[in-house]
Image 1 (tube, rainbow, N blue to C red):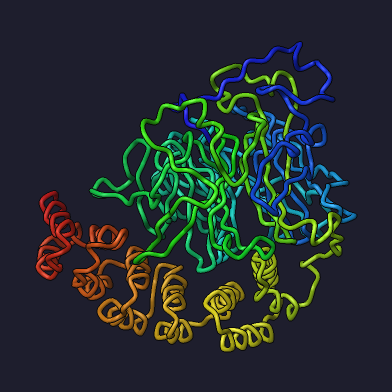
Image 2: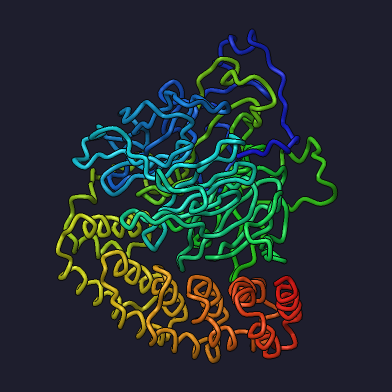
Length: 623
């Protein structure tokens, strides 16, 4: 989470004797606070409040969080950080609110043999845990909250060179893949156990993904720093928060991004994609990117990015505005932009955010959408933000950690909001399909995963696919069309002919996802390739051209030429944040494979795309 190179600290002096004092008084600045005191001293915008869902001694060092299909909160308790060791007792625990009062009242230890566990997701009949050097799957097919057996090593080769930067932030993508992050100073060569070294995937500073049924692993995008957050908006576009370097990136499949250090895997990258931010926040350590897609907060927060500022003990909101093929990240309404040098002044620590903590021991890591539309926030809680700068003593001997719940308009809705007990793993497919249109993406995302799991388990989905096709045909908004489209994809309801037909859909985002889903297996039929060339030439949407540039990287080189020739004729794309560079990533191996044809392609590049012409010439000269 925090880089070894980061020396900015909020150092609070405190003695063991002070910690032993009774805490039935207002804590002094820099002093330990109970979970309830910390929540009471949070400042949020009008109408919002935070309360303690769980806290020490019930939980400790919560480094990762997930919410399952029963609305329960899963936590990894990491006791080994920051010193990796081959064996350990890190725990996966389940926190449940059985009476609906907003506070957990049941704790279940699911597994207690983790070593440096940092990533967590629930699904497909078990629990996914990142525990370097392994990505583990712990089966629980009967869903009794007890492992069916020993963990299964799906992938190995994950490094732990910098223990801030191991595999983390597991997130189910709209396409059904499991996504995650890894930082720049940990060097991994990932593959299935037994994979030869030269066949493994190099990961350092990347967003990666793993398919839960095909068991395929990929580097989705490359670059960044020690990122600890990735999430998707209503259109399925990914965003990442990073530390030390500029904090915000729109992540595109096949993109290569500004790196804190080191070199890109491909030495012919020549240029990388930069931040979309227009501002800076206090300090430089951020974690827990979550796009708010709930139905509880005011509408103005929808599709905006919530994330933690670890050093400043805050939660920020950045505004994501569509521009060209991508986005611009603007300062949210609750923040003030920093000016001047990066040196931190004392008053800046008291600056603004969406959540402002008087308690400077708060170290927020993850934010997760709740079934009621609120947000869960897990807090590592420690006096210092950088453990590696002192012996790790778990906050002067305390086993600390909290999960808070952020809600809106509690007075109008009642302090106690009884929530019916539910289990989406048991409801009929028809009910899951209805949930795809729910305004709270907790329900639509979880419903889609349930449909995918039933497909993976061999259930006959013929009737369900017919209903999903009906939902797609009737959908009158882009998010609902996409939710139906993604559900069709994960239930194997999108055949080749349908995907090709959707390339002519009126909705540009449907065309985009028809491209990406068609090329998921790194191939496309001839009819689709012909349509790609037409879209590359005539489609007015820069977003479609961006998805084509990503797709080209997944196609055999011989199939790329006519599509690339059409893309590079768009001179206006020189003004776009992504397109010229993404075109280069698709074209570079083409030039490497056929220098003469590559130089001929350069003559067809629009004059405005000056860098692209230069890159082609540079690559041709290196052959």
